[in-house]
Length: 166
Image 1 (cartoon, rainbow, N blue to C red):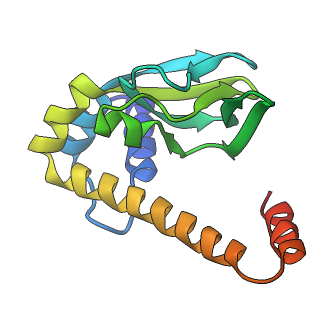
Image 2: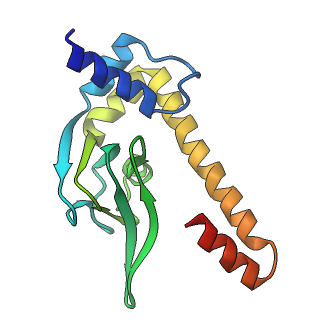
């Protein structure tokens, strides 16, 4: 195994769930590595679009991606993510259309993981499946905490809290 491959596998291991929780084996990492390919996106180009078939998830390796939803009044930005973020996985695993669009803000490098290649790996490698589940639960918990914080106080305080979050 060469240095570049070792770096790639180490990066994958850090990107899925807590690194102190159920370490991934070399076999796990080889399998996960085989589930996708790297893609480069230039500023303004999409990784995926709201409403399209969700056939892949993306692990952001470099730079920033904006998540947004199209509305009659224009684009509603729902988040901005950077290195290590996994996006599109919930829609992909549910076989539902993407609920938002993802657009490169800066030149982005991401690992695109195809559903058709990932699902058998999750069945054969329970450690990957559990770590992916833990990562999703962490995101869900963070979202719940944000909603609960926004429900406190006056409308003015809620808006101030949102501005501070952004």
